[in-house]
Image (tube, rainbow, N blue to C red; front, side):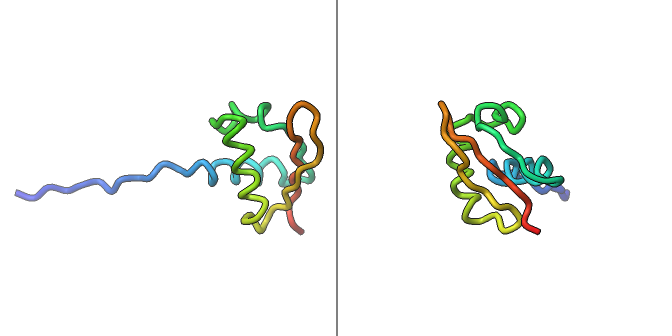
Length: 82
């Protein structure tokens, strides 16, 4: 008797989910946002987004990510690299 196992599909990482969201939203130009305003869209907490944004600013080659300003929370500026 032979059993076939389904390959387990790993859930998309938090970083990959955020990166995909940013790529889609910034595809036509600049995107400015505060983490707390996109938290529900990507299913992450504002704190998680803040930590991932710092990481993505170093690793996401197709996006330029910078801390833009701080007024009650960090505003991030994301632009696609031409």
